[in-house]
Length: 149
Image 1 (cartoon, one colour):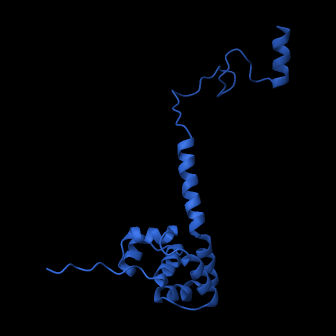
Image 2 (cartoon, one colour; image 1 turned 45 degrees about the horizontal axis):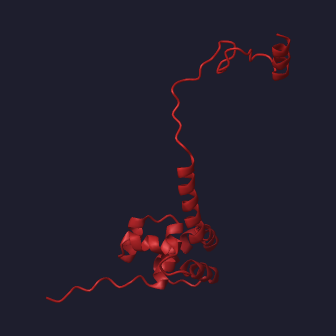
């Protein structure tokens, strides 16, 4: 029995189109249907690991106004080339990966603190947790009153 051939790899021009369409708001499912590829292939393109330089080439082609894919051409006609170029420029792969790393670092750096209950108040000022200090007086007067006593 002959072995079934796998799908051909994503072309460089298609990778450029993936960058533009994803920056315009296309979902992974839409990209999967348009290019007949698995979403992990799309994420490889968007991260810059598969077809490096495709994002830069897409910006150059958009700037020259040269259509290379029917979906990109339709998008440029609907939204205008300036808007498509600006949204694609904001979706730089190196910027996205940096933001992901930063988000991961922040997530692990902030400890989870559980509060045992509502803050206790002394009755003089709502939300005050001091039991021996009158929080209705300014800080300077409190320090003077504590020294006099």
